[in-house]
Each structure stands twice: as structure tokens, then as C-alpha cells.
Length: 263
Image (cartoon, rainbow, N blue to C red):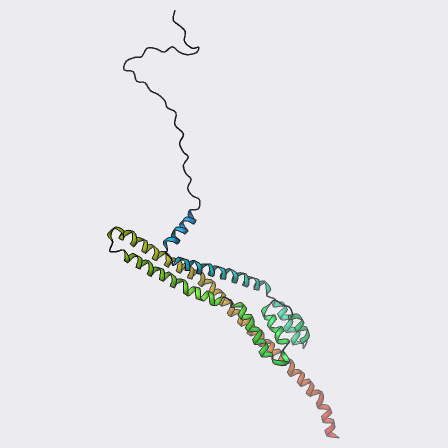
């Protein structure tokens, strides 16, 4: 009687010569794949910034100044659009036309419209020097509107020059290593990359600044025309009012003088 094996275990048969024994191995745990960095665009920008060479730092400064100026001018002109009050300007001209200069001054007081501010300054100094007061007020408004235009004009010219300077420094760097055969290929490609990146950044900043610069310049020209038109209309209407008053005064004195001469 053979001894029984463990419960539920099949008896092991005799080993057959030449039989192939296969074993199933459980897969060993492997490390999870490293995820790709999500900030690919940021790394791309940083890498190209480094490849652009040292000239990229002044180009970066120029780009920051240009962006700041454009944003500030956009907000300023946007606020001026909401400050316009053409209906009140018509009311001021109507009051002057009927001879109520005090009402015209009251309507133009404390206004945020540049044309009305200029008119108020002229109405309050008409007895001293109307034309001088209008010119001073118009000059102040034009200076406010044209603020930072000189800066933008400088940036439009400076950015391509900086890019051209980066091109020259990159080419100099490339030609410096032409005599060394081991470093020639790597150095030449790095120098050409520096030249192209600097040039592209300089031109991009110039193009970005040129369009807003032309737009703001045209807005200043339009404002100057509006101020000139308002000042001319104001001078003509006030001159007409003063002429009418003189004629009325002369007409009131004419009958008495004629009566005295007849006596």
C-alpha cells in the first residue's frame, strides 16, 4: 500500500527521458515610462533664446518695452474713445451762436473730451488772448496723445539693428572655428543659428511695433485736425458775436448823435 500524498495534489509521474519542461515566469514589474514635459513650447523658446547668443538680452529688453508701450497706448486711446462727447460740443457752439458765452463755458467745464477742454480754456481767456489760449490747450492735448510715440519710433528702428548685430556676431563666431576641423561643423552651425535667430527676433519686434505705431500716429493726426477745427470755429463764432455787439452799440448811439446835429 503506497503512502498517500497531500490532499488535492496529483501524484507526480515518472520523468520521461527527452521530454521538454516548460516553465511560465511571471513578468517582473517594470518602471513606468517618464512622461514628456508639458512645457514644450516654453523649452523651445528658452532653447532658441540661448542659441541666439548674448544679443538676445537687449532684444528681450526692447520687446518688453515695446509690449508695455503698445498696451498702455491701447488703454489710453480706448479710454479717450469713451470720453468723446460730440453732442456737448454741438451744444457749446449753439450757446455761442445765440450769444450765451457763460452757458458755453459752463457746458465745457470739467469735461474729459480734449476738444471741450481746449474750448473751455479759450472761453475763459478770450479777453486776454483767445488764439494763444487755444494754442496752448491744443498743444497740451496733442502732447498727451503723442506720448511714447518717440519711444515706439526708436524701437522700430532699433530692433532690426540689434538683429543685424546678432547676425554679424553669429557669423564672426562661425568663422572663428573654421581652422579647427574637429569643431568646425558644430561651431559653424551654431553661429549660423545664432545669426538667424537674432535676425528673426529683431524683425519680429519691428513688425510688431510698426503697425501700432502707424495707427497711433494717425490717431494723433486726427486729434490735431479736430482740435484745429474746433479752435477755428470757436474763433470765428466769437468774432462774429463781438462784431454784432459792436454794430448794436454803434446803432444805439447813431440816433442820438443825428438828433444833436440837427439841433
